[in-house]
Length: 137
Image (cartoon, rainbow, N blue to C red):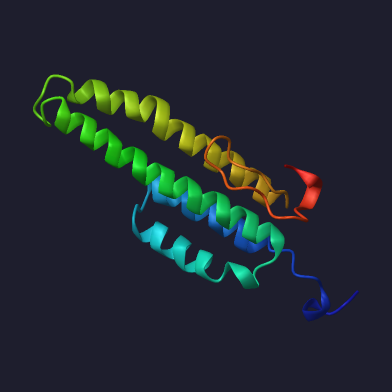
């Protein structure tokens, strides 16, 4: 058995961390988790292909989540503000359709990362880098 320093680096821990930070950004610690994810993404050039793929997906998904949240707030303001009659309609629609889909993408991405496979977020994901494990495109 080769020494642990001789084993090829797969990027599995970093891929799992990226997906976990994405979910944490959506569900537990918004902002703080995103900053840590951006810090990891900054050093992506040194990361193995699996980690680069998951970092790209999670940063893209987080940016989309932020833009959708800003759009939701803009719609609320345009429809009469936070005391307006449409506030809860917009909020419930956002959480039912947008936020829940983003969380499902993250949960599936986490499962793929834990399996050592690449996966592209539908609609909002970045193209996968060449050489992704499992050939998932």
